[in-house]
Length: 564
Image (tube, rainbow, N blue to C red; front, side, top):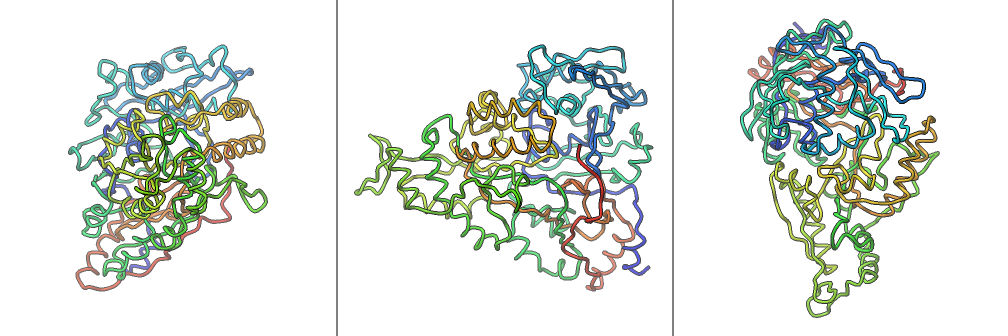
């Protein structure tokens, strides 16, 4: 069969396996205690929430719950669990599972920091009957327009399996699941494999007939992305998200790419854009001083890094909520350009004087120095330029390297001076989780910098009751302006595209990824196409070419749907 015809005639198929780079080895497969990207992606395939989002419209829809209602005073949220829902061991999913999961998350004994913030304004759920559960707002808790999302968007776990275990140490492998996949196996520090639940209770849902197609999804772990990329080119990994512009620009011209055995795609859709930057721990010196933080921000030559290391493919950040701004509503936050003179002025203002003999910044008997907590060699190329600028300014940066699991433990305990952190963005904004003052003291929270500001707290509390999205967006911009002025991060850069590489044996949706998804959308919407796989093997054996596909994909402008 002609390969071009395969592209046109492709239909969604069940079966096969996809192997994906899953970052560095996680500290746990339990996403409630390991708040990392790939752990959460896997967990979300194994367990379900009460409600979910439609991938194309962004609107709420039932998941475990078949219906829900909200009281007139917006204080009671009642969910009726689908009576067809059952766990992979055959036991029914009940309201008791919902209550147990909530109570477990909120237990002080468990390291579930960010989730506690989301659920803190609810009492323990009321079990009305086996299939009906009600969440009631605490008596003095403020109204929050996200309440329906807060009480319906956490993964429900099987009480009968986990209630007698130490929740912080649960080994998920081989455990009961409630979603389209189960944890089948794991090799420590190497890989985790999910297996499709062919008897999943929701598998016959017409809306999901083209979803969850792979029999197995394997996440392979590597200490560095370079090692992972080498494994990918050797065919040990099928799918590789690219976070480095230089890799896309310089390392995708080998025979496998030129002959289209491996495809490279740049997908621009409507997935929200997050932020990344050097996080500074404001709880302790030297970053408890805003003048030091501003000085450091002026010593990161982002423009040079973007131009020389990343081929100019990124836009430089000055906001934590990039999507709130446009030509009509420009961002007025300060842009921290590389400016050693300004940095020197801020350091002088902070009392750190330049010693002419040593060339170091001194205050009393102390030198200005800090430790950068690194989680991999991938950061070295940025750190070398940064370190040199610091040295010339009289600042000493020591680099401490740790594996990802150790890095996560230090982040949970806020045991760092500076590190790099990247945060994704969702369809709904939760400023409280990242910027509320009380979160700065909660172990394992997302407020890793220790940011505290009374005006931001006030705006966050006011935003909870705002019915108008325009009013909320205006409040987010005010929050953004205050946070940016306090410089908890040296904001770096971001990319609007999802850049992905994959072996040319998969079928994909029309626009490659779903409307609101980043690279993780491949796991739910792609499929292994046996005809493509066979054609790939045939052409590789002949050293022949496969047809080209467009590298750039933009989600259709004619698509409809609204986020509510």
